[in-house]
Picture 1 (cartoon, rainbow, N blue to C red):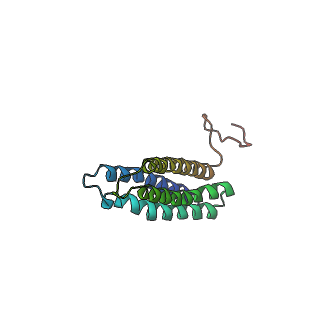
Picture 2 (spheres, one colour; picture 1 turned 60 degrees about the vertical axis):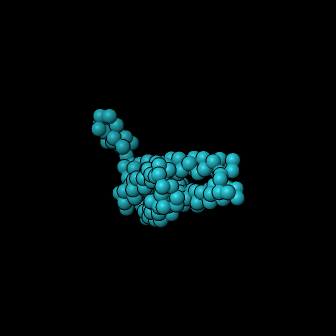
Picture 3 (cartoon, helix red, strand yellow; picture 1 turned 120 degrees about the vertical axis):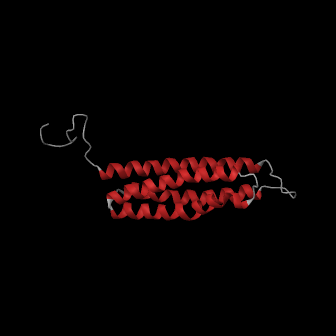
Length: 150
């Protein structure tokens, strides 16, 4: 189950990297509109939450420390915050549909929250790798913490 935790957390990190790429696709699509961000929305609202739950389940089944399980669940909260920030940024328009000064500020917070989420997932992956290999070898190949002489 520990290998499954490493794999699921690595897949979650890939999904977050793709999320930034999909945001760029939406931002640089000439037609603009909501369809330009379809991949970003689907990945962010379906794929990432599903992989987050899978990663947290794998962490629990691998008997990971509670801190790692909680850290694995944190992206769900950050995704909810992302959706709220996106809605607030989209709502920050005047009657003509032009963004008010609040819109870009909230949009920037949306991007920063995404960066924080990536860092959380990197920490989960690092924790999963450490859990998967609890006794790393030193530079000579001897297992650190082993009671056997090198």
